[in-house]
Image 1 (cartoon, rainbow, N blue to C red):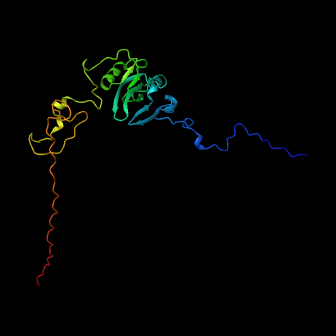
Image 2: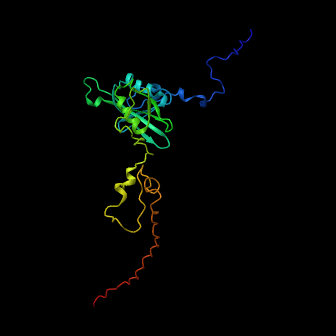
Image 3: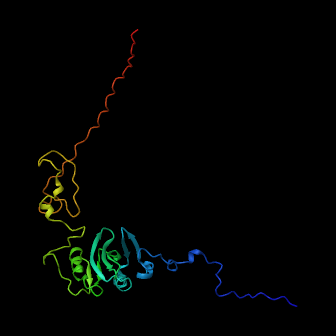
Length: 257
């Protein structure tokens, strides 16, 4: 009898011999759920989403192109039907971070401690700050977007009435940007210009640090180039080392006989 021959066909589900762990992409790894989320952030909000929880607040960051989808997911899948607020933060070197705080209200019998809060965030660049409007998802976002538009200059495309909300009609600039010049502080010194108890006229003093948005009055404003240069700090002479005290001699007590 002839010996049975071994099949030379490789099973279709066999792992190729050259396969390594590095061939596994991040998409094949399931992210763990954070906080009260029912699944990982990428599974719920799409690729590029991340979540973290700190001080009892769950925060999810999403790409700008997934902003509206993330809001819809929060409302429809996570039950965050309560819209609280929307605003932005100017992050120098990064962009404008637009934030929206929503919440899922507790059901019957859960009590006030059943509220689940969620902070959604995305970032738009300084040179082209624009996002689609969230009015179609949360109607209450209308005036929040108007305020964010005039304070930071973020454009919300598709907004039905993106007009000034708080500032005068002819106001120029966006006051909450870090590069916005506070012109009033050029004319009137800011409260920290002098130390408590410091006289109006005095000798050289340490250079004061200007707060964000306050320009040097000698570089911007009506007194540009007209002010004398700041006085130089006086040169400090090194202190003399303390003189050493003379050595004390031990006093021997003489006991009377």
